[in-house]
Image (cartoon, rainbow, N blue to C red):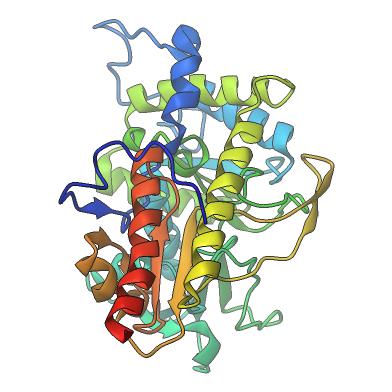
Length: 382
């Protein structure tokens, strides 16, 4: 039987726990222990201009943030930054929209088809349909896509929602009309082994899921092609006239400290995060094993260049299934657990996405309620 700790009083209450959104509050304790090391002081007269550096293609990108991004990727070894344009955005959500806009505006024919392999990140659907653009059109599951003409494939690796390592699915390497956007929000060593230094045309990253600082709303893209980067910058200018400098300065400070901890044996954030995620996944797998009702994906071990050893993946989301024909999101809702419906991710009612990044007490309550679903079913059968 899995031992559940620190559930406080939530388990005995009627509190609804929301694990639908990936609100990454799990790392609060680590950052609290850093004290004032990440504190930034901003005076009333600082950062008043729209402009950061007019010599940059992305002129609203703070130099400190650009340097911190390069330093962190260099320390982790997960992505190439040389000969790239860095485009900063209000989270990777804005950057994904900017990249789709940029590629579509440069395409020979429109609307450009946009696809992602199911199960896919549900927000991709909203991002590509909300404004009803005539430049691009959401075409759904990349596994089923066979239309001719220009297309953009969104590849998330590790994948959100199921944590698997992904490559392109449509695969038209000699097709000039084929474009790919790689979303590497979770390609960090506390979630998955760093097996290689990624070197793709457009690579998206987000501050939120690395460190847990979702409220700062900072993301960045590493872009090879200058014209694509320029179009992305144009989109962001029209959309929000740049990105908050206060958020950029805070992110730069924290990312710099994060890079420094990579060299430490006693205060490594990625070591801390990995141990926490491992512990949570072990508890969840034990509950699922005891229930004999639910299913979870299995992840193969791979050699991690960052840690220097073979490791398993511990994704930021759990892709939970059920062996029975049931509406799992509704079943969990009856237990006062909010989750992301599998249908929203191009899958079925038997699957849900659950965030693994909540505070510890909330996570333990979730485990308790999941275990009770099996117990309640056993009572009903008898």
